[in-house]
Length: 299
Length: 277
Image (cartoon, rainbow over all chains, first blue to last red; front, side, top):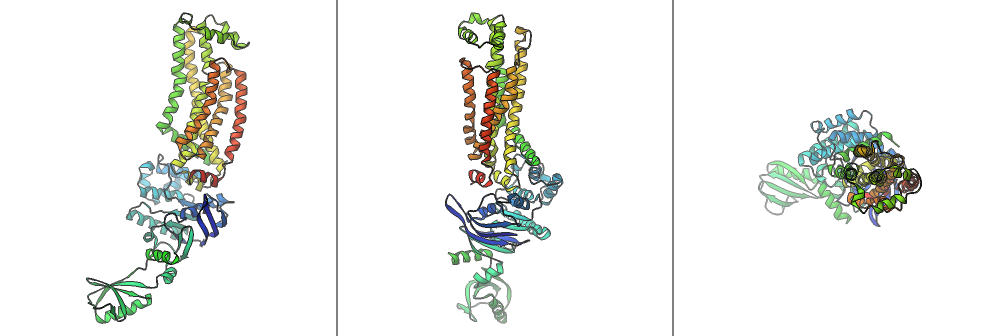
């Protein structure tokens, strides 16, 4: 659905994107991860033909964003980081305005439908200037969905949202992908929020691709040693238990380090043989740890 | 041009102007001064006080004596006294350049706000993300500034006509406004000048990053009109029909080149680079 090959872009001689190649499959949610200034927004602009690449090839939905930009833009919806809405217009007026630009048939019905879906029906006649960040983001998503795009670009969709707002937005994105099969490229640095949402993750740093893959693929590659925290009454003296390294002790908890995740059931079996185990949690096998491990290795 | 999208942008921009008091209030005050307050301030005293007795009237007599042969000279000298001559001249000729300033000021304010305003609201990038042809965006932005400027000028001219005819009627016992030069001014020169001002301001607005910067630069288009005003006051120039025909044609030629210059910006990458980055 989206394909980049050796794309490069610089502003005033400063490289922002270098030799970037990746693909996004139809119906996939790709987590586009990286710190501020890593080139995520620039990539979204390139993919929509708003700016042109200095080198490389880009295809979106089978079209070149530079030579067939409007064909690409007809098929894509974009939520920019600031949501970019007209504050002096109401929510409904904003959607009706953008519906005209996208050539939506029956704009009023579509706008009302999206306002209801995004939980903004009661606020549809309120000016956007008085909206909270969460409401603006939801309206921004409604705007991006007006023309029923095949591809959705979400640039920092959860920035500025409270945990509840972020959770509800993530749920909505998931449902949208599940029910409509929309391909989503989700640019963010809020790693914890998107861990369970995305099918694959792409890590970007200083405009360069660090790694791309599913969480399991990347974890297998970079998170070989893991820590496991076990809830138990057992008292262990010394730095080891049956050959397993004891990393830390807390009242009622023991934390072990294992070299491979396959060792976890063996450890648990050994513990259960000598005492009760109430629960166990794997530590350090999350997106954030993966990100920092990746950065360390690629530095 | 995508008419549906253009109509949406024009409507949005005009609503944005009408809902922004800081934008439209200064734009209304000066035109109302030109069309109501100033004409009354000039015509009423001229009606009630004998100018011959005020003295220092010689420069005006000299100005009239230097008028070229033709309808205006004949009309001026057909009046009985200096009061009628002065009122007729002021109403039909002296005030004419003011009515070029009205569309210029309106077009400058709205034109300067067009792209720079979108940039300030961070909405330009969103517009660039839509499947909107840049010809449509530019065309709509130009019309969104041009139409209110023309409308404001026509309304002000209509008010001016009512005010001066009522104020001067007891002296002339007939309507003295408008003369032929005003029809040329309103239907030929004003649209050309407004279009020029809009093009220059939209062009500047697309280049700079903020409304204030765009407005300050764009206001420079008023200078040639001030030149015409001063030239007429000093007797160097007379804003008669012939002058207006040529002036309108010259401005249209300039508009053509300004339009060509604007069309160079019909490129998302270039517009983005000058606006968003």
